[in-house]
Length: 164
Length: 425
Image 1: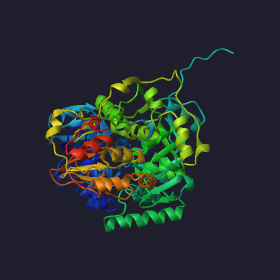
Image 2: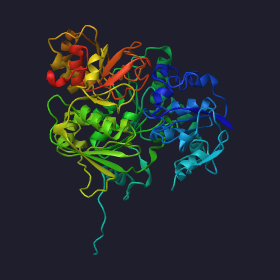
Image 3: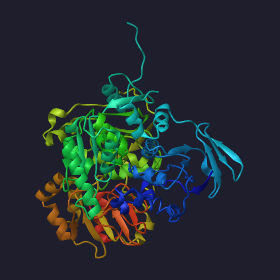
Image 4: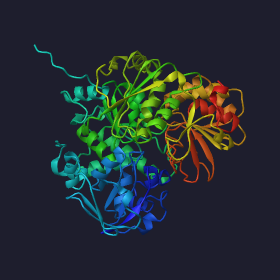
């Protein structure tokens, strides 16, 4: 169980990991201290292991910087939930074993206690007592997610052997 | 033989079918060979570390794998200089091509010298989509995906559905392709083409010179697009010939009966100059919008892969030549590449710009991604020719970035407020 940190629509990768911290990209623990700083300055210092980032439409729009999902994960975030995701950010989440869940996040409020069953595709809002259902990943992404990310996937298979 | 009824292919379906050696359509999953893979200094160090972890720290095709140093070029900090050292060492070890500081923005340099029609191009930078203007499939991915593309020479992807943008007529004087793409993004919004190919066609596109087409493809990602291909035609051939690459030219166009998710028709003749107001690239207003008149512009930036080619610099310089910039408006110019810089020098445009009161930075991304080269102050307003205006984009979350064309930037630099370029061209 973890707490929901609520964000709006169109959270860009600049808001997640800003260009002014570019020099910290080879120092990920320092970079992670500035996660989502320009969207919510209180996030990185207060997020707890197992919490959830909950956005609206088009979460992660903008640049290809993989550092964005990496620092969100490093903060202890268990999953990112949004109504929709930008393409590159979504792929980067899966490549780093960070669950990115598409569901109607309007019903989730700041501070709600959430429980997520990835296998069954269910978000439980324990605060309000409702459930949201989400579709499983496409098989190609599911295979990468199952290994914990693309690095582990390539280490195991030595190649791209994706089907379906 | 019985006739088999099939629909034709979109541009992206053609490229990917040719590459994988079978007929593929939107929705199909493919593992495709990659013709060109590249990284830049903000994404490359992570790519190379991931390649080491994956046990593939090599280049499958070193002559078609490139490391660019363009975002922090030259490096303003010790940490970034250290990243550059790592990039140079890795390129030397693997035989990858290195484009060091001063060569220019990765997408611009790749376009000038490497991207070919029918190529599959994967870059660790979202504006890799600019390669689409060559009649290629070009798409941005994260560091790890590009590490696989460099190390194994392939990638996996889903063949995208296509939205077709047919633009007829001719863009009026003072209106640039930047105004067209901003208008389109305003209409379909910043997620309107998510996961899709944005394919361009029509008389206005056929008549459009390559540097203007590149701006259209460049900003496909600002609408969420996966790629932004444009047919390869006589103009493509002219561009390649000008780069001693005429032998690499091949025509490509979608079939006339290709299946599109949606077709949008625009009348190019009816377009006007527009700007995107701060926060999102889809906040589009006319350049004549009265709310813009009260906004003092403290900095004009002519730069970025979107609009800093020699033709953009020429367009700006011809407007401001012999004039003085508005007193409160700093003007920073960062040519997109060494070629753009050299052409502007030879044409006398750099001198005209410096006399106007502009300062010139070395080729690269410059102020656009907020690393260095023109970070605005708190509360300041910027009019930039770049592609993004998100909070914090230029390095200061307390500054405000407006997006516009090089001509709008020139008119704005003259008067210190956002100004209709049709009044000065």
